[in-house]
Amino acid sequence: MAKKIQGLSEWRLNILEKHLLTSLIILFFILSIIFLFISIITGNIYFRGVAIGLIISWSTCLIALIFKKIIYKNLIKVVK
Image 1 (cartoon, rainbow, N blue to C red):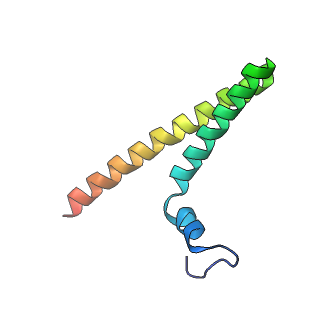
Image 2: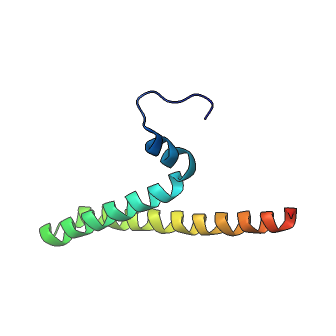
């Protein structure tokens, strides 16, 4: 980022700039576990649906991250 966003410390800025996809995967994973436990405790099917949606979300993000790393690794090999 050319200009620093006011109010954000360095570690937050580092996460937003360099590790956004990884942090979103971790967030979706934690939220899916929380909603899954809530659905088990309360027996509410709607919370279970939210948990399933979040599981699908973080798993597809993880697949995208793996492909991104593989493609990036192959591009570095081609350039060298």
